Image (cartoon, rainbow, N blue to C red; front, top):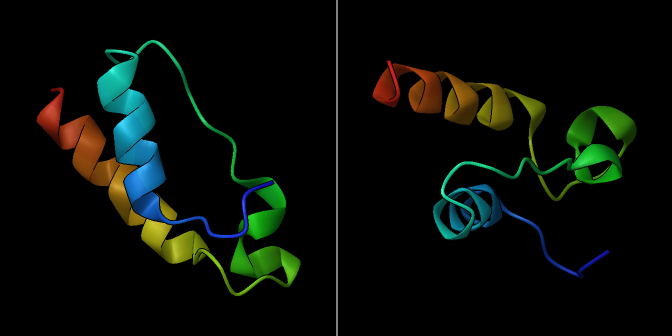
Length: 54
């Protein structure tokens, strides 16, 4: 796993794959004890993506 993970990684993969690849952050989430990515931020990012693609 990379030393640094943020929501821009989600956007980069989405852009480069033209929406055909999904990422799993997993243990980088704060709900699993990490301080790299907040679960609530991921939920908001996904909501924004859904509204953009609607």
